[in-house]
Image (cartoon, helix red, strand yellow):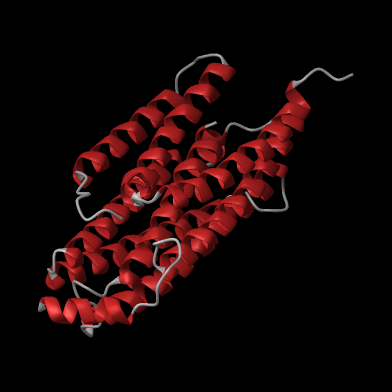
Length: 92
Length: 199
């Protein structure tokens, strides 16, 4: 990690807290299921990204590490997408 | 610590071809395998849920607000963990001990609340073999809880070492390594809380 990386951890904490409150409130809204799930996934993804980039310092690490972690995430997304696709895509 | 002593401690560390310390690289590779482990669990949950003709609303069975509080506690423990690392990098060993102890406390409270939640749910008849939802719920949150438990045990070890004065401004790789694991556990919970409790 770079010696010059000093993120404002408390600011990130407040953002995480605020997004968590928004998430819980949003989950009680009467909106179409797809909109609800899409919104919640986006909010959770945003929170996870903040933790990875700033608390785990991925933003300040060498590119090598980013490539290793990024490759794993891509494989993970493919794995989950195949599972979803089986049910969402029209059957032949 | 003098610059000579700092240089000496760095000289003790074996060289790394990637420029990333070996323990840190090892932890990241381990975390990548953990990503695939939890992706498997989450993927199974999604497949089972989409395949089910009906799925109970989690809010009717689970205590959303209690778990939201638990999520808040875990996020707080992530902040104290990163502050512990920042403290030791700045050479403030008193704050290192304080923040590590707070992280340990946060993890222990999280586990205690999860045990309380399980006891309450089991008493109410919501068990792992009663329904698909129950099976998925206990499997995913149970494995995560086990990871938190392992993290708390390791955190206790690292905190003990901090109190014994084993970490210095120049030598604190153990703090960074356990910190990575701890933030990962927090990150996974952020995802699990959303998909298990709020969908």
